[in-house]
Image (cartoon, helix red, strand yellow):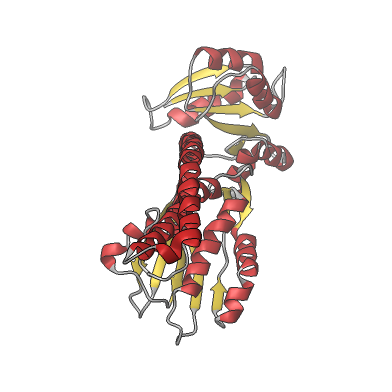
Length: 374
């Protein structure tokens, strides 16, 4: 692991290096810098897994150093930054984390094992953050390409389709009484098929639009998101006398508008697809699992056959064959979760009828959320 220790005090600098190398000779390749300028030159010429940066350097503070890095356009994506502060510098440590540092250490108050754990954890946080951001950028490009394709295809298909439906309707109105045998039925069926195709094209456009958002990724309170989703669904919930219970939800790094669409889709489906003789009951809970949040939505609805549990996430696939809906709700839900670097799947309930929708989203601690807001 390649490290850069940026510390102007040679005694402190060597103390940090000794703690890192103690019992771990050969594990770390450690370079040294005395000033922010020296560190910038080192970063410009080489890459490092982590930097340990003193809060007060001769030519800049640790926070100013990060800004200099950005101003010069030096690529330090995926690099972990650890602030070194003195005793009593809690405010400085908090400021550093708020501006993008992954962690901090206090001089003279850290052992060799603790320092190595701190550095390893900071590197893991930086890699996770970079992985999620890379995934988001790739998805953004993929979604934009699909949205552009959907707009072109819908325009090219809708125009001749509307012309065809229009002429068939004129035929039906003007000559319907003259059509013999099954001809009138054929015209009627053609018009119905054309309208279904028109709705499918509209669904294609909606699918591309509903997972696009101009919102920036930001710290998002899922307690507020689920509350807003239930407010939007208040009429449907009241009509079915449904019970929707939401446990404590986490804060995640995401786009509030489309996360609202995600929970609105799932809660709305849970309320809608329940036997009319049964009062809908929906429970939403969340728990931490490693570096992820595991969110579970349970319902007592009609359930989804095991053979169809992957198919329901495909566009236009519907297991419940009612006259409403287009079958894109769960496809949109999966795309939203993908956009946030997560995963969604459905299982049958083990304690009775209904389904369990499982969502995994990356977990960010307060310090990481502060870093991602910069």
